[in-house]
Every structure is written in C-alpha cells, then in structure tokens.
Image 1 (cartoon, one colour):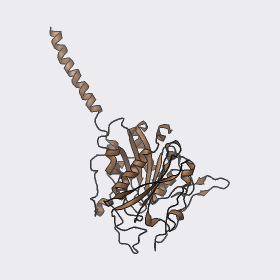
Image 2: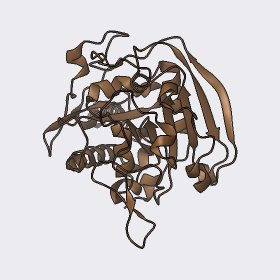
Image 3: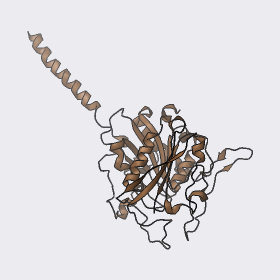
Image 4: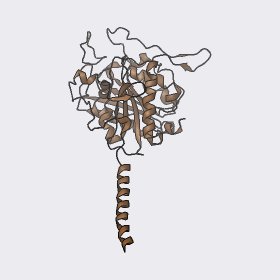
Length: 357
C-alpha cells in the first residue's frame, strides 16, 4: 500500500518535468543574444526620423570584431522553424538604421518569417576590409538557425551596398550560399551602368564605378577592390531583383531585355499590375542639397511602381525589374512595394545553403 502511495507522487513529478521540458523546448529562439520586439526596436516614426536614430549602428555586437549591427527576426521564432535570411547593406555615406528604413523588411519579419541582418561600416563605404565582419555575421546566424532551416539566403543592398553585394557574389563564401540578390539602384546584372543610371546633375564623381575586367586570355571577370561591374555576368546561378527610381534611369528608360534572364533560360518579360502605395517611405536624404534634383531624389512620398517579371526561369529562379515612378535614388521604399519584393523573393527557389560546404 505504501509503495502504491509513493508511485503516484513520483508519476506526478515525472509528468510535470515532461511538461516543463516540452514548454522549454518551445520557447522562442533568441538570435545572437539580440532582444526582439514588435514593432522592432529603434524604429523611426512615419516621417521626420530624428538624426540620432537614423545614424544608429545597431545594438548587436559581432564578438570577433567588436563591431555592431542590427538583427531583426520573428519574436516567436521556434527551434527548427524555416526562415528566409537577408543580409542588407547600406549605400555609400549611409548608416545601418538608414538602410533598415530605406528598405523596411523588418516591418514584415513576423508575417513572412524573415531574419534580417543590417550591418554598418564606420567608414560609411564598404571595402574588402569589411569582409571578415560580414562573414562573421553570416556564419553566426547560419550556425544558430541551422542551415537546414534556412529556405533561402539573399543579399540586398542600396547603391554602393548593391555594388558591394555584386562583388561579394564573386567570392566562394557567398557564391556557394546565396540564392538571390536584390539590387536597389546598385547595378542591374547584364546592363552597363549607362544603360540604367542617368548622371546626377552637378555631382562630382558621378561617373561609372571602377569596373571588373577580364584577365588576359580569360573571359572570367576579376573583381576589383570595391565593387563589381554588373554588366559582366558572374559564373554562379541565383535570382535577381532590380529596383530603380524612374528619374534615375537614362532617357532610353530601363532595357526591355535582360542578359541575366537569358542566362537563366527565362521566358518572356511580363508586366504585372502596378503596385500603388498610399503611404510614403520612412526615409530620404534630409541633408541640404546644393543642387536639388529628381535624379538624386526629394522627400519621401506615396507612389506607384511598375513591376516586370521574366517568366519560367530555369530551376525555379527569378528575374524581375521594378521601376518606382516619379522617384529618384534616395527616397525610401514604400510599404506595398516592399511587401511585393518580399513576395517575389519568397517565390524563387532557395536551398543553396543545404549544399554549401
């Protein structure tokens, strides 16, 4: 009888331990020790974002370099959950939190299960000296989530950030891992700069960036120290989304064909319904301009975007062009077009990380 009475409390304790263990296993993941909130921390208001907020370099410390960055992810992220990972690079002269609001992926992190790392270089111009820091961030996040749980890994960048992303795609570290590149006025694969960018009126040094060149006797491009020439097609295969303000384009407009789409064996380019935004983006260049002009951009404001997608690319890849009407280089992306880019990204094939060394 005494033995029977002892068994019941032991069974209750065992059941309680099992329940506690299950609850613990279901606790949300905390990535890189970063706190998580919805809406995300250090978020700008809808307009007139304070300068001290714009120039913030992020609260998360990359331990090997001691440098900081932003990390946004679903606050209810569970172990083993499948996510999409994006490394988002700011433009030249910019800041991490400016980029975070220029392309506000963070507003959709919970809905679309996104993990977004937004780094910052104190020189405000990406160089090869930043590569270790960026690789450390990527390696850390992949290690914590598990590459088997990452549906796709994308690079995104505005202006010099986009050109830097292009350069990174020439390196083994990224070419083996990256499923797609979102270029926000940072080079269009298969197009010369003059084909997609009008000169900025009165801006010194507004010509083409230093280009990649082919080594003697070889068609393979040699990437330069800072950026790559987007007109030289890299050897890897990945999806590509290009976005530009209408006023950034030359008088001839955006090319109606794509050499990258040809490489990926895509079909005809199809125009999808325009994307209409009734709300402005968060950010724009608030500095006083010596020569205000539409190419560089004015204040953030609502707008409309044209979207073109090349059909049926090989192996589920994606090639798309987006023209934001009546916009220039620096007006932040509006919410509806940001969400449409995310949908495009998620529709493309991923999975390169699972095969990476």
